[in-house]
Image 1 (tube, helix red, strand yellow):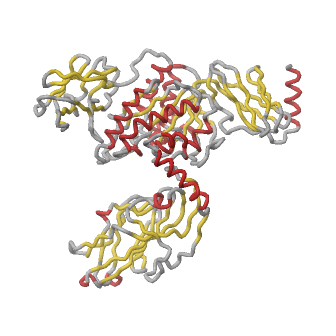
Image 2 (cartoon, rainbow, N blue to C red):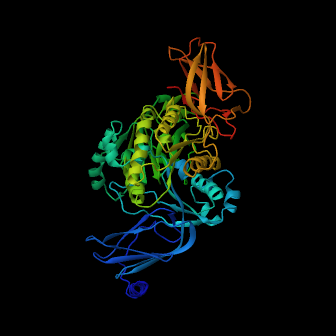
Length: 616
């Protein structure tokens, strides 16, 4: 048998025809899930036998009529430094420095995508990142209208030159697993900023759920638009700043939003013009005026009555304020034209309260928000919008489902944190988890996620509702939630403390997946009991409850009228006793029901924060 194998291998090496193809996640430095049967897949010549060797073990399979083959590998213990050889009569491949370890998929939106270089303590962490047993495969962000068979990316061994670009939360998660388990760890990072959970769901699932059927139809209706969309646009716009230019073929933009939403479901880079006619009072004629345009993404050149009055040549979200000399100003109709340059996100984004013309030296203002005309002059096709539901599942998750993983870590929700989307999130998110488990062939696959950090977005109850939907998703077996309520930043939706995020996710995995004896999370609401005019709150993971930095804050009570009032709260053993003078007969309690609670301070003995909640 061994002699036959060597002959086949030699023939393949000598007469390689390049017919043997593998998905990119099978590559040098890859980590395969240890102690579990695995399926290796690829394509080649129809009917040919494909043989695989690793660490002295041999396996084989036969390519079907379409050339697709799959070879089943037996379980392999932890280890590093292996060569995986694949040989067929048509060609051969050798994959080097293969490790068998623990493989986790890290997915979500920008807070999971955020790189180590962008976080607190980056310099020190990067300098100490050399670790041959920690590897990361970063999936290139890809949206697709149908499931793909492969992703773009490659495995990288952790070192200062590579780790700086790793998912920060995923990296710190892996570091903890490496420290506690002392086995190789591989992270497959598949995230994309600004994306709702619907983008990460399989299209078939979108069509099944009452909450997402409309979004499924959105996908179906977008398909012919995608097929008809131009791949490139290059118009002569040399005179588009002039007052007399024809606006036939221009569209109307009623809201101050990014161009991406106007061009949806296609993503383009390029040049898009916006213009607006403004009526000015007679006494403004010939007098100097200040133009406050609001913010523009990415950069722009601005014209007033056909003359350039300002612009930027680099990406900045600074407010645009330009001086217009009186010689350009007249009574009645005046024209503003803005040539915007879009790379990724782009557009006139306002807000409208800072979009106006002001007569210098006076309080007189004329608003310029509202409806603008716009038209693209130069566009380069980037791909399908990542906001189109189902497309990120198709492009970034479906291709991975044949790759053996231990579980998933997830940080997403900001894009769904508005009413009523947050109310629907519990059912949608839970259904997505169940569907991913089915796709990966693991009914009980561990799925650990981050509860949204604090952020002052002033979006009503959207963020508290989303956090509570995440908490309620814990009803699904095999899930765990790492609260980040205490490590948010008021003015930044991307808090830079990702070390605690990764460590807290790792605690869930170490406790519930690997059987380590430690508390997986912070105090987690279990139930409440009414005691006269007080409410006693019971928690899971409540050993050693303590109030950090003063008395407990952010507890509220309501009565039958449903109105919540600030409440006093005190720790009583492993419970919290809550009361409010305005509520004589309490019926409900909640904690940290804010977008950004400053210094929430209920912790357990492990130093982990209590999750925000509202009683059922």
